[in-house]
Image (tube, rainbow, N blue to C red; front, side, top):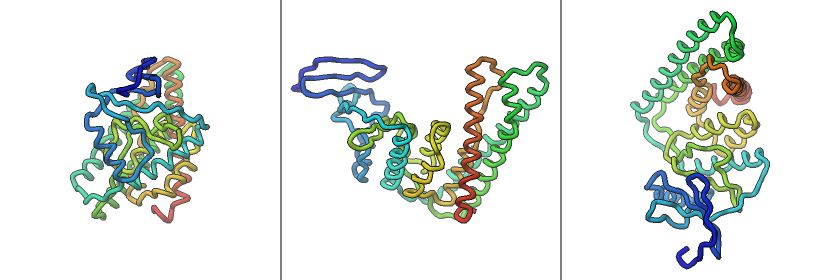
Length: 292
């Protein structure tokens, strides 16, 4: 960019787009100052599906080439994301010796969350039925209380099975996890490229698909997408069990907000729980021999 003449500068949020007499770029402030290490790791492992900056400025801004995105249907883009996810994980997999402290921490923190939510929703159930004139949000909660408790019971069952299974293992897999793995963070260009790599770090293989599922399950065919993903990066038995527990665990919901927006939010959350329930009914029938 040193010999180029700037013709236009546009600012959108924390990004600046610069048009010169030769090309177009966008600048983004770094959130992590060791980002160069991330790009090096990806390149060393032969993963090319990410947007790499041209240079890093002294001001800690990254300069990226501006790439016009191809506009595909969201379902096509979701399929591309499954291929990119499986490739990222296959390229960055390593096996780590089982850390009993880490395994115990996952178990105890998830167990604590399950018990807390069980008590929380029991209390809400009792309070809701004392309402003389229940609001639409409260009525929605009462209609779905069985779904909530079934979700918590299933999350707990899968957690116990995972803990039993993982304690038989000597090693488990770790991969690079994007942590913001949703449709807007894939740039459809000459090849699909992941963007927003600020939170990329090593973690468990199940994490990115859980993020994707919770964000997009109401508009995407998750059964088909999971099949595409698993064809190229199948979960181990213990990974599937923890995946089942973590995905099924419901969020903490406030049912006493009376605004229309709150009611719509609650409705969507219960729809997501129903989608998750249906998803696992289908998966457990399909993969019964593999996981049970």
